Length: 229
Length: 251
Ligand code: HEM
Ligand code: SF4
Ligand code: FES
Image (cartoon, rainbow over all chains, first blue to last red):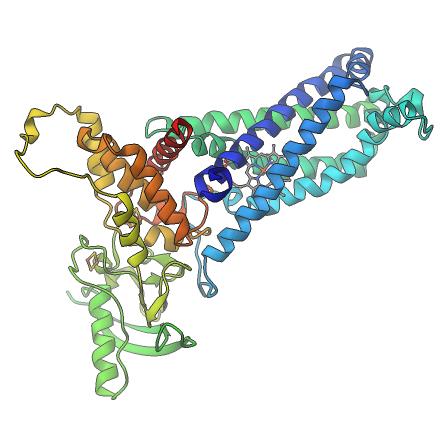
């Protein structure tokens, strides 16, 4: 199967799974922004995306996307390490045009993944999971707070430790995306001599905006809770 | 006015493909800054021979930047610290008196060391043999000028065709990927009417060969372009991806 056996096929999977994740992030980030303007509106979205069949299907799709992206990332990185040969260069130097992020995609991805566990605990386990539990008759967690996303946002991000942890996480994500977004288009073949600098520039603006969507909610909540209220 | 410098060389010495290699340190005095890097290597070898030691094996041929034979990973860069040149075009004026210069062979699983600084780059030839050509029937040869080709395509094909198959791209790549080379070879033909006919089979065959020979997966870091002596653009890699993906999807 050429999607597994050929390098460009594997890159295609990397690229498509990456784009899926980025689109999810875009949606997730836009949705989060709502909380800045209205906690009620945000909770309405949370309720809409609770343990409904469509939200559950989307969650499964997302988890699958993550699995595929990570498994391929590991497989690719392992093959690449092997292709480099046993003997390593004694002296290496960096090239001006090569971005740091591009050389460290796996590490950045693993950082993103590591914090994801914390994030799932912070929000998903308090919200959708509680709802799923209740549906299955297991009454763990606080069902009233399961649709009160605004409560959880306030609860976690008003604490400086978590605000900082999330900002660190988001910066790793930003680095991952500064290379990831344009690279995924390049892997699909959507690039040429004229468009190469443009695609890079547009991708980086896009990646920055996506990350800023998340950053704004963290910073806004922290500042509002600690200094304004 | 001629200036001379003294340098310390740390050179990778390896007796054969299976032997364990290691660095040897040599001191070389009064090297003219006008000499080329390979001339400096020649001086080193003469010094070694006069000391009754085994000279250092390294690849070279044209010594004017067109054949792609010279290699050497010098101070962390394929073809040395200067940009857009081959090792034979590197001059000792790029180095300072007292410098230590570390010289290593290309390191890539698909380019095994033959001896010292020489590696076997036959893998690139095998990729070319897999599809980097245009099949022609013998018989009446059509007039090349009778085929109109736009200047843009002609220029881009020409840029791609300037690849000399040196292997610096795979040597520089953290993934040991040969994509820039393969992309250049696929591009130069895919852009021209004569090459278009076999574009789908060519892209598939060359990529399959590249993967089979153990080169890595490209992650678009761009180290290849930065180190390529001919400045081949990674935009050709996007074209190769396009050619390959559309060939596969059509199947
Ligand atoms: C929200 C999470 C993530 C997003 C949005 C994301 C996005 C992307 C994108 C768009 C690409 C470019 C694909 C391409 O070049 O064709 C990529 C590549 C990559 N990702 Fe992720 N990723 C995420 C998480 C992860 C995780 C958890 C890992 C590792 C365990 C990871 C490891 C990698 C690696 C190794 C590459 C290959 C580098 C490359 O091909 O340029 N990513 N990612
Ligand atoms: S693409 Fe550049 S670095 Fe790679 S083989 Fe061709 S000339 Fe050498
Ligand atoms: S010896 Fe021919 S390119 Fe350097």
